[in-house]
Image (cartoon, rainbow, N blue to C red; front, side, top):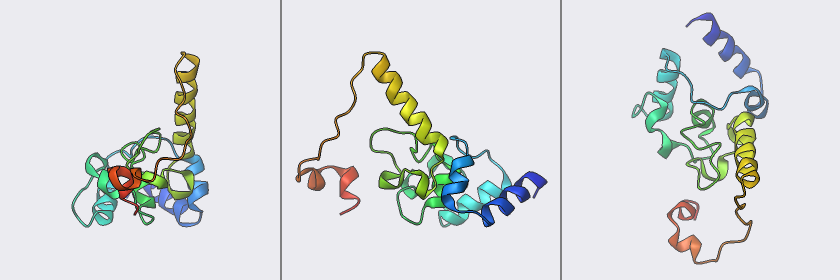
Length: 136
C-alpha cells in the first residue's frame, strides 16, 4: 500500500473508535485496493465498494463499514438511516456527519421549516414499521 494508506492503518490501530471518528470526514472512502479489500472482507465477499453496503450498516459489529462508508450508511441522515441506532460517533460514524446533520436541521429551521418532534412512537409502530422491526 502507499504511504498514506499505511499511515492511516497505523493511526487506526492505536486509537479508539470515537477519537478516529472525531477526525474523519463525512464522505464515503475513495476507491482504492485497500478499501475494496476491506469492504469485501466486511461483507463476506459480496461487495467491494460503498455503493451497495446499506444492508451491512446497522449491526453493532459494523463500525468499520460505517467509518468507511458514512454517507451510504446514513450517518448524516435525519430519519431512518441505514446505520439505524448505530448512526453515531461511538459506532464509527464521523463527528463531521453529526455536525452536517445538525447544520442541515438548523438550516431547515432557519428557512421556516419545522423540526421533527421528539415523541415516543406508539407501541404498534414496533410491529408495523420495518425500520423499527429490525431491532425486535
